[in-house]
Amino acid sequence: MGIPASDISSWTDTQINCAVPTGVIADYSASAGSGNVVVTSADGLNSNGFPFNTSFGYGAHRWALWGTTFYVNPAGTSVLARQAAVDAAASTWNAAGSAFHFSNLGQTTVVPARDGVNVISWADGMPDGVIGTAWSYWDASGNVTECDIKFSNAFAWGDGSPGSSTMDLQTIATHELGHWLRLLDQYGSGDAGKVMYGYGALERQTHYLSWGDATGIRWIYPQMAPSVTRSPSSSAKTYKRKKGVARYSLYATLHLPAGLTPAGQRVYLQSSANGRTKWKTIYRLTTNRAGMVVRSFKAKKKGTVYYRWSVLPSSRTLAAVTNKQKIVIK
Image 1 (cartoon, rainbow, N blue to C red):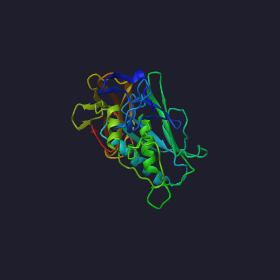
Image 2 (cartoon, rainbow, N blue to C red):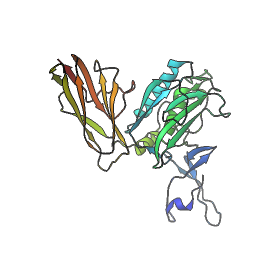
Image 3 (cartoon, helix red, strand yellow):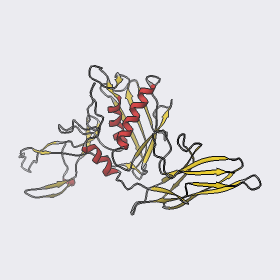
Image 4 (cartoon, one colour):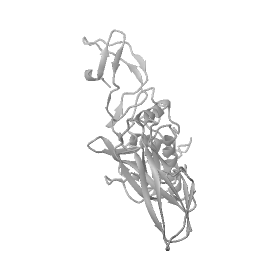
């Protein structure tokens, strides 16, 4: 892949500073890969190849928020195994040390379409040799608004173990989810061990991010994520009904890192009957500013409800219970 002159910021006899080029390789968006760099003079003379490592390629668009949700359409076969493999792939990116978080909302029968819903599914009739494809859509500001994935039914899907003649779903799903994060394919000889390597194969397992893969997501989504804390800070509150009704309000404060103004940061208020499982979003606020958030309630029946504030949507993959508060109605 060549580097246009406009991407070269400086050039001396001993050093060239330039942007890593991106383009299209084998009909897919990709960046320059790792391998030998050759410099060609104006007279057409080529230098010796110099080994160079390209850590990652960036597709120049990103999510405005710090996480997204998705559904899996397992196409009626191997449902649990396919859900588990996709969960493992999402968890790999979630553990990379960035501020971004994937949340699996479970099974659906919806197929990928430009409908505002992120869906992972399987399909017939995909081009020969294509294992899976990810689509990304963005708005006029360059913020990603939706992504979908299709895996080809032309391949036998499994765990990619030796002798199985299967395509490892966890490996390919991790790769395609990397595209949702706007990481590009790399095809260099030094990229074969990366999740974002552009070629897949039967019985190949790549379950761990390389240094370059992890560096990419941390660079695009640095650990400066917004956070939300409840106020007051007490972990339990009791309210007595008056004339059959108890009135109470829940407060939280949204904190944004200095210099960060997200386009539509979401704050979620979630409830659970036992404070451990089945958290359900009951209120969602979209805001561009830090500060106080409040939600008021009326309760007519005795009982106990647990609440928590979060900047991530509730899902079965969101294990951490933060800002939990117990409300008792008497």
